[in-house]
Length: 187
Image (cartoon, rainbow, N blue to C red; front, side, top):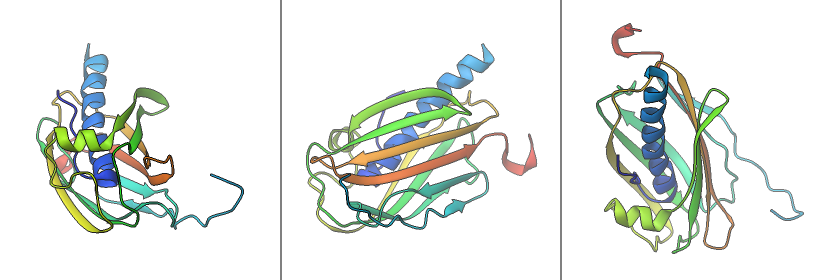
């Protein structure tokens, strides 16, 4: 499965992590079946919970990208089907070539995948609607990925830590997906 990004920076980082997660989930299915001294106030850290997934914006109010919302369709996500992710965010500080994200996918405490990628390169490779350089302003990005059929009934977490070309915090996001819950209450 080709690794693509789902959107721009958080949009790119968030979305790219969905593809990384899809790759890791497919791999897990195969396995299972055979800054500085000053203090900056953190954002609320409130968990946004949907049917079978949730996310926490763990970033700071000073991050270059401020996530407003993330929506997925279908909810809950269905293994072997397309997943559409829509992300709304405000870019506070322009994003340039060299911005990157560290993404970690875990099954419980087991680390399945850890990867660093160039968000601008991923956006180009995915032919995303938003490309670098990204000017400050509001953005809404929508992208669809195909989830692997072999996703085991398990709970996964995806950590996204994005950084600007100057290694400043860009975005921080923790995603949680519960594939133990299947559509229609079938488990």
